[in-house]
Every structure is written in structure tokens, then in C-alpha cells.
Length: 171
Image (cartoon, rainbow, N blue to C red; front, side, top):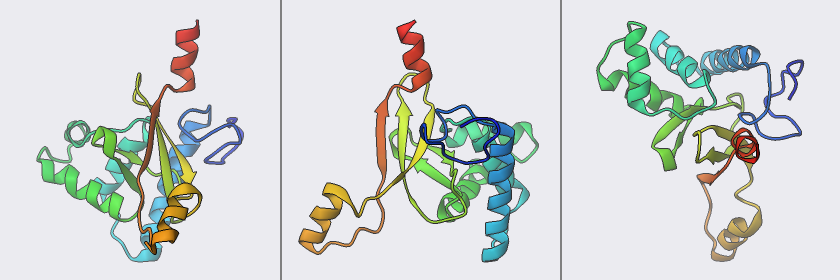
């Protein structure tokens, strides 16, 4: 993605491993989150907004205690429930995702619509990129249909090396 493009995902790959206008990425995602909360009658409190901002700062997953440290620096309190309640809200409402492999969280880059994300996690720098997934298609979808199983939620996580780390290793 070029810095001219407001698109959340480029033809070259998922957001997180591509060059993009990060300021626009953050402001567009916050605006979409605010609009979604307003449309759904949800309270987007200052602490919830700040947690989402923290998650948007880098395209890396953060643990709850790292988020809590940043909240404390901003004067939002230092008790773990402060971070966990905000994270629970963000995940439950599709504004953030939990990266199971890292026991950490990342902001959703597609908060304006329901989707099944797939995550690519760099094992060297912990960068995470979110891409679209289609669990109802492919081998998993076929297996589910064959058994009469209805897929409601999937977690797709792939571990490997991001382009930036691969470039460093090749240099």
C-alpha cells in the first residue's frame, strides 16, 4: 500500500507487513470504531478508545500487562481489570482480536464489518498482519459440511518470518 492509499489492505499483502500511511490507518480505524459503537448503541469510553489507540500504535500484538503499563502512563489507572474490561469490550465488539498463540491482542483493521480474520505472526519481531479468511471454504469447510457441523468461529494463525525480517536475514 502506498501512503496515498487509504485502503486497509493492498494487493501486495495484508496490512502490517506493507508500507502505508500509518497516521491515516490509526485515524480511519478509530473513526470506524466510533461510528460502529454509535450505530450499535455501545459506549466507546475514553479508556476503551485509549486501549484501541495503544493497539493501533504498532502492528504488533500486545499483552494485557503491556497495555496496562501504557494506560498507567496516561493516567487511566493501574489495576488489571481496567485493561481486561476494555479488551473484553473491544474483542466482543469486533474492534480487536486476541492472538491465541501470543496470548496478546491486536486492533482489528476491518472494524466496520464482520469477518473471519487470519493472522500471520512473525516469529522474530512479533509483527502481526491481519488478512481475510474463508473458513467455510476449503478443506475445513468441506469437512464441516460432510459432518453437518456449522462453523461459528475459527482462529487462523500462521507463524513465520515477515518481509522486513526476511530482508534483514538475506542482507
